[in-house]
Length: 492
Ligand SMILES: [Fe+2]
Ligand SMILES: [Fe+2]
Figure 1: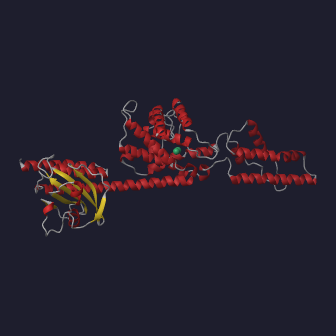
Figure 2: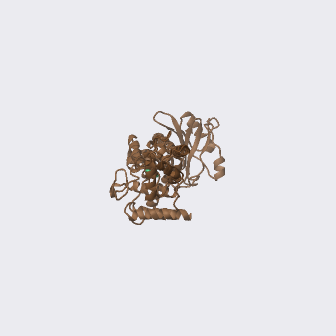
Figure 3: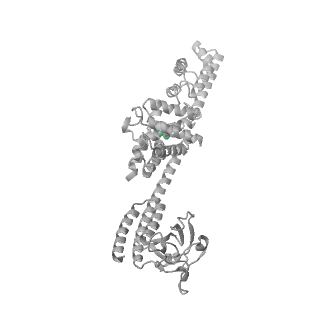
């Protein structure tokens, strides 16, 4: 073997490995990749990777061609110079040992045979190098075990010492790995920070509208489940549509935050259950009582007019109607007319009565035909999606999160243009937003979020989704896929 040519090829390979390491963002995959590549570069049977945490060292990866990759939970131990890994971590010196069973007495480090005994293994040659980042901080130790001339040879029979030329090679790999680890850690930190920020945002919405609590979390779970189901499909219409891990992450964030804009909607509107608040109902009741008392006094004094007598005779029934209609529900034309008449009654001049029994605002609320919101309040609730998009646009997302504002801000768009707030149609509604729409409507239907609103059964909710798909409002393929997923969930 031409050693120089061999080494040149290995340095060439090192470059390729360096590029691969720097593009791996998943920390645990990265750590495994480092050990795997270092082993293949030096033809050794086994390798371990230790990471420094303060004054502790934690074994993160342990691979061996003979024993396989151990799935041990990471073990942490103090940085102790008497161990090989501890010595390298503490001093920053690399060690290239021919046979760990014959370490000279004078050496500061030693080798314990516990692992070998437990695993019936024989550790012989060891090359342990510090992993130093660009600021020379030792962030870990890469330990390679049992060099072989060719991969696949037997341990311990064919074990040879690590070639001296490999030390520089492995040191170089270790420092590239250290930088990649630092980058991956930084990205992980940012992700964790962002994830806690999102949880905080969601908690803030939940706190403002407890009847909606858990909605964002459930919508996220459902949306991610749909995306994963899309990925699992091998037949049309989803066989060519695959989400990357980063796209699923973006969808997950968009789902967490889709209703964040509710933070800008008045709490009184968000939590409005009845058409009028309890305080307003109390004021109206007092007004009726006062009117009754005043009219009674007029009657006793003999100064009551025939119109006033008629009013007095109807007051109890009128109040009953008002109280009935405070609760959301259907209202007949006859009832609406009676309410209008009550609001139009002239009570001025009767003792303290200067206001009508029902103000214009109270009448407008009582006449709401469905739900509890006036058209203006409804508009304000709908505006939450615009607020969500505006809020997310303020955050300078880049890369795979760039489209977050568009995805989250389109969750109420319908494919036929009947949604809001941009009234997008068809292909203008991004796929991820179509998924959100299905998950959002399903959760809104099945979770009872208002005391007066009964939750739909799963069958009924799926029926409504199917109808909406048939009307061209929701994506029919997503609704079909979602229905299958929900059925599977029910069977689980
Ligand atoms: Fe929404
Ligand atoms: Fe929602």
